[in-house]
Amino acid sequence: MSLTNKNLLGIESLSAEEILLILDTAENFKEVSAREIKKVPTLRGKTIINLFYEPSTRTRTSFEIAAKRMSADAINISVSASSTVKGETIKDTARNLEAMKPDCIVVRHASAGTPDMLAKYVDCTVINAGDGAHEHPSQALLDLMTVKECKGHIDGLKVAIIGDITHSRVARSNIIGFSKLGASVVVTGPRTLIPVGIEELGCTVAKDTVSAIKGADVIMMLRIQLERQGDSFLPSLREYATLWGLDKDKLKAAADDVVILHPGPINRGVEISSDVADGEYSLILEQVTNGVAVRMALFYLLLGGPRESSE
Ligand code: CP
Image (cartoon, rainbow, N blue to C red):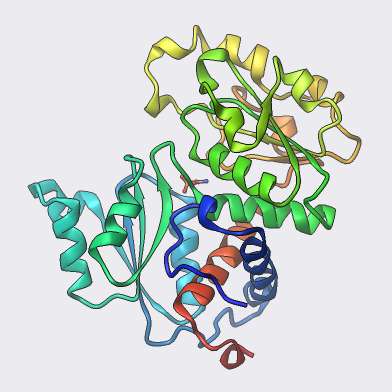
């Protein structure tokens, strides 16, 4: 089995079978990162460009590490040092990058739809590394992988996603992804940060944190995205932490074997307390480890390197 599309623009366009194929492939690639020599020749001769118009630590670094572990040439474009600052449009940037014959462009942008637009201008593979409040598909895939590894399955789990749902591409991709694999997803957060009609993505809305996490197998806390919202959404961060933040006390309502995810970066003491973020139920750093494996799997499946050559 292979993926239908040559681009990854969102979880929405993947079938449940395709998601499971990516997760299984990532599990196979994960052991490469545990080797002493962390390199396979699978994508030798391929060129991958990371084009990030927004800051990133985890996503940009793990796409670069994934490319390098597969022997591809990885090029990072720093937008602040590119011709974007001279006024070049995304279309012109894309067409000029395409003229250098890359095999893949990984793009992050503050505007929803930018990866789709880019994909129309170039022939190479385009991977969405996060576009505005739309989607962050590789994040949802690494979250699904982390939960599946720990629980053995996704179907039948109760997943609570808590926080700034309105501005969160991570929430959108995860609601769609977990629902496609048969989990029941509940979201909650301040009313000003829950978009009208969010249920259409396949989730329910709970009135408060404790209701959302009651019996939850998975809790995903979201970062308050101060860069995407004015002051008008929240009276104060202290009030937010009290009402919506996760601490040991609220955690008692969850299932005994609950696991806690957070896409990072964390606002410690706001959406999650440090003792919970660093505690026994947290899989936050495992998510980061799995991010490399998932991105290796995406490169392999989208760019078509022969699997045998990596053995
Ligand atoms: N999870 C995530 O997208 O983190 P970065 O912004 O550091 O890439």
